[in-house]
Length: 242
Image 1 (cartoon, helix red, strand yellow):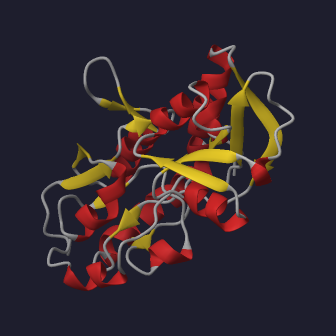
Image 2 (tube, helix red, strand yellow):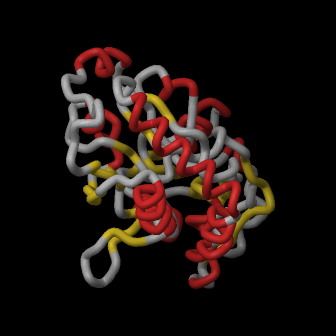
């Protein structure tokens, strides 16, 4: 799924806050801007697939949890510095990120990233196109690596707006994020070509919080074993089931 180019692995060495079983509340950090994974609902609360998932994981791990939102581009640095205790924000597990933080096992299968273009431009050659992506994402890194022209934006909404405004030929993002947008907007179309990037989505934690990671790992595995994780994936149309 999505994202994140890291600033420096040295951040991991500066973390002064560890879980160590001493927190009365586990703070769950998310973006709140990437439906269906996470978003802010009409009442101002975090909602979506990861809200339901996170609440269930906390219940199974017998943890008291609260939700914290943070902009994407600083979500790993603010985890490392102790502003919250986990990242549960559609974050793909990558080797680069794993140098700075730890991950639980994945709670989604790897899901293809999709290209969305203006309707009528379905014959686009993405290799020679101008492609928009959210900054610091695995999609942005992929575009840069394949040699296409990349335009980065701070939010996913801006990437889609860039295509509609003619600033970019296409946007590359998670299929689960783009599909409902295309379905609701006749001015947009999805290309048949897709890209499989990353190793599925997991929870990010500080490297010092091994006990907390183990609790969430066990909770994720229990949801896989009894089918409740697959039920949530199907409900929110996230991708392939386990």
